[in-house]
Amino acid sequence: MAFLDLSQLNKSFGPNHVVKDFDLSIAQGEFVSLLGPSGCGKTTVLRMVAGFETPSSGAIRIDGQDMTHLRPNQRNIGMVFQAYALFPNLTVAQNVAFGLKVAGVARAETQTRVDEMLALIGLPDLGGRYPYQLSGGQQQRVALARALAVRPKVLLLDEPLSALDAKIRASLRREIRAIQQRLGITTIFVTHDQEEALSMSDRVVVMNGGRADQIGTPFEIYNTPATRFVAGFVGTLNTFQAVVTDPATGTVTLGDTPIALHRPVDAAAGTTVTLAMRPETATLGIGEPGDVVLRARISDVQFLGAIIRVTADLGGDSLTLDTFNRASTPPPDVGAPVTISMPPAGLVVL
Ligand code: ADP
Ligand code: MG
Image: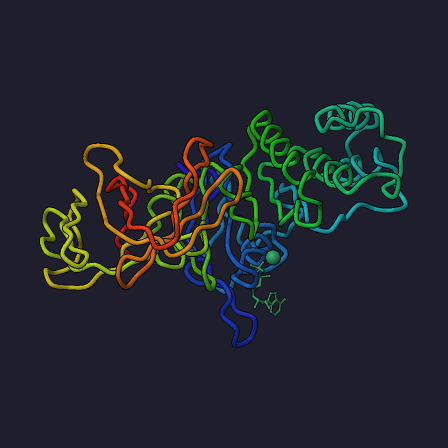
């Protein structure tokens, strides 16, 4: 039974239909990211869950209760935004206590919870400071503590890391995930950053033009993208055309090279299909038994230090491959013939 259930949510602003037939079921304690480019409707979904926007149609249920038409303060939801929304004239402790005060929680209990929250975010001694005396990362941790202090049923995070610099972003990712897991709080995290979504989430929803294109674990989203949009938005992608020869066994040909996918292909014999492949799934030279083997010619080599990025011409399409620099073998020469091996599982038919 889903803890948080969004069913057939739609939202229009005037003629602008920005969230379309959006379904999502989240289990208790799950961390789910909404991932997609700017303007695809992520914030609008989050604001509907929070109660700041009313859906044009559809329903929102949390813990068995229909929340669709409740006011934000009746939903027991905590929210953190991209921009630090701390009250500048209140101390850190007063900021964290804010929701408790509004809810009429007794003074002693408030004090206990504020101390708990400041310990949870690793800032036990900064209760007396004002927001301007904190770094951006510290301010976002306080915003998180303020959202969690009221013990919400659901935590909503709208690009909370986007305004921070890269190093702090990476450490806060781990910290937010650790806090979320410690509390077991059901969380929706909005981001346009694929690495953030993949590294933090139990499941990812890839959104495209107001719709959920795919919902799956990070592993599924990355390795078996359901649509061309998902494949291109999450990670770097190679595509090449091949002709289906036997749909039942999943045999296709590239030029005159047969490729055995070892799983049925949903297209008739003789059809041209697009195969997609990640740069890191292929190796130069002979790979493992069972690998698909292609012959190509090197057209470009980029030495990136840890990685050598090789572009190879298949006689029409070209593939980009990332190989680890193992120090023992120098980068191949442009123009050299090359054998490329990849596991059939690394090839996705789009
Ligand atoms: P995201 O968070 O994915 O960047 P948003 O949900 O903020 O996307 O916006 C989706 C679309 O809805 C955008 O085209 C945006 O301009 C539009 N939009 C969002 N809020 C409003 C509003 N209050 N009034 C009119 N249009 C809006
Ligand atoms: Mg947004």
